[in-house]
Image (cartoon, rainbow, N blue to C red; front, side, top):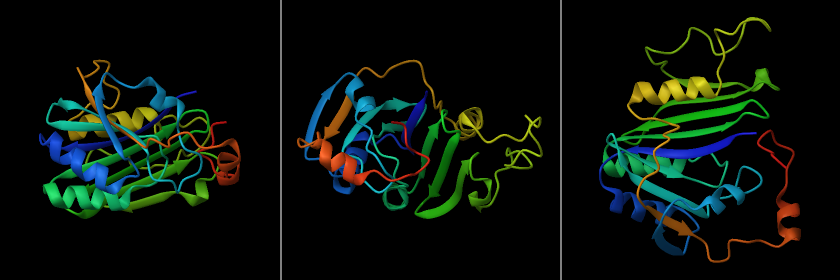
Amino acid sequence: MATFISLHIKSDNRAFVGKLVQELSDVNHITYGSYPNELDENILPGENANPNFIAIGDIQNGWISVQLNSFKKLHDWAKKISKELNTLVVQVVGQTTSDAYYFLMYDKGELRREIEFYYGELDNLIDKGEKFAFEKPSLVPLNDNDYENLFNGDTLEQYCKELGFDLFNDVQPEFYYILKNKNLYKTLSEVLASKKKRWWRFW
């Protein structure tokens, strides 16, 4: 199973991005270091929790990548950050086990594109904003043998390459800003109480 959740900001001002992310999130503790592998083990259940474990990488090809531990659609984050920095902000979420994928882009505070695709519920497809010139003609396969019109992890990777950054960069940055809530680990009863039957489930 592969789950990936990230925010990407076209900027070279990593310190200011860190400041904005801290203001928008539930974090109260900042450290520095290599990529925290425990972030991937602390994905929050549900779709409404603000990220509370975040790693902000070095600038690569003019983009700052922010790894997150929440499936929440970050419209407010993307809108504020893109407006404050007068730039593009992209949120990408994918889960290969459930074939669920999400793409969000704001430009200078304005929503440009939003796509949500889950192969289990094609009727609930989200397709907002003006299509990019590089997009496929359809987001929905014509039939089970239609591999041309698939919105999946490869599609998200291609979108990001067209915008100028590598979604799955194999080269790890030298160090990260690591932001997390000191009260990160919830009790089992709190986790179970927050569970909802949504397609982002991975437990």
